[in-house]
Length: 400
Image (cartoon, rainbow, N blue to C red; front, side, top):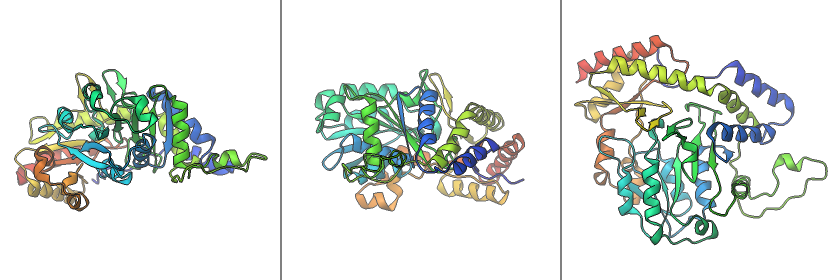
């Protein structure tokens, strides 16, 4: 039996919607994308949504909307994919990394207090595997630090504190203390990449509301300007009779979502509750079979949260990096694909060259060294999940 890691779940529903767009004569950003944005806001409860070509673009534009740049500092986790940190470098700010909690892949929230100073302009925590971070405590700390905050533009001044930009790439549909995670940050950034729970093949979005006296509608216009070359009219507006003329008000970027991509997402969103339900069912199969073994899973559901069940991460008791890697190799021989989410950033050449050292992030390394992700995708059969778990038990007996 073959068990791939995470193929996309595409049905005739998505295919038909894409065909409709292709036949419509309008395939770039247009009415389908705009409707998708409104539907996402309706699903998540966020006031507004801006769709873009990636979560990376979403995070970088959030930083740029806030006017964050050289001389500023932004905190993120040492345990994440590079996008959470690279966007900080892109805008010219200093990357500050926080370690994770002990035996966890989530950021050590309490460490933020000591890392925030008068140059700190934002914090980017990461919902690894779709498990929400402690948003309540993060916001409490940001409020506690209002006294040392020094805004450098009007948006920062209206916010009045360090901004919370969530890397929620994994956590679309996750809930924390009864609220969708899209509503818990100043800017919640989601990914719709091919392996995500909800995909547009490539894509992402920002969910947000008002910032102080700055209305969400004004923020949305700013996001659209930055994402489309600083152009005052998008292509759909320009094609109207007599509507060709436009201005470039900032030297912006090109990271808009197309109607073709939005059509895929629209089809996915219509059945997203079923997608989440299936992921939860597969997670339970894994939990039941692996209970009491040396494969200890992260908790997707807790007292005050329900994750999106994006990735099924386990830690192998008694394993080091070499044994973890051997387990992955042996499972591959049985045609089961495992992965690792993630290699801490201080282990990467790009971040070593900046000056980061993994020795300063012992918890992040401690989690990474014996962690792996099992296959988890919504079209996966019960038999594939059972086959994966049972073979993992056999391999662990051989390796550990």
